[in-house]
Length: 122
Image (cartoon, rainbow, N blue to C red; front, side, top):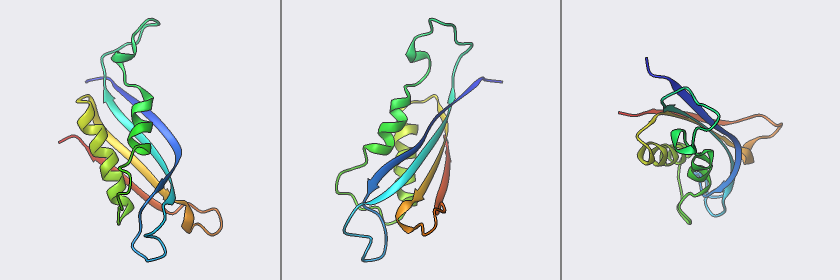
């Protein structure tokens, strides 16, 4: 069995043009995005192991933060797929991407309303 490493970046607040209702479509909405990536790696990691033996956490953060400027995503599911495609296409060691998106603007009493999208390498 191959060792597995999970990298995580949680609770990034990202303004995204998304929504289907007229009041949602003209201004970015705040989304809380969390990403977990399953990465095939050789192990174990010794104290002097270089970064390229793993993956930079900032790659996950950039995938969420660097969405196309001016792009309107009708569904937050499309935002998740865009992030997943970016991560799966950027590194062949990425086996699985788990993305959670919470729509902050629709919460009325602090609840989390959103989606979870899990994509596997084909």
